[in-house]
Image (cartoon, rainbow, N blue to C red; front, side, top):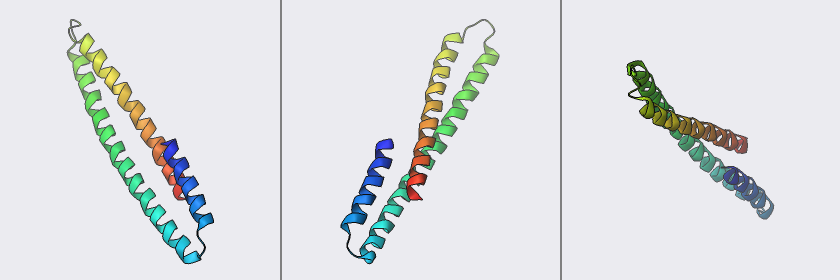
Length: 106
């Protein structure tokens, strides 16, 4: 996503240097803004989905831990915990991408 943010910045700067009239710059800026806004909304929706997935995985781990009297579910708990760590990493990356897009919008 850093590539996206850098691409947006570079394309914005190139567009501003190449455009000759202020009216054309406004149209380009507006299109860029809406493109960034669309990307931001997409990332927010992804974050929401990941948060729901994380909650579901956490509930599964809690339930299995509660029922794990004779260590019957230890392997399964470890697998779900690994998935949970992966989802947490994806959430963090998505939040950083949202931050990058918001910075590019300002």
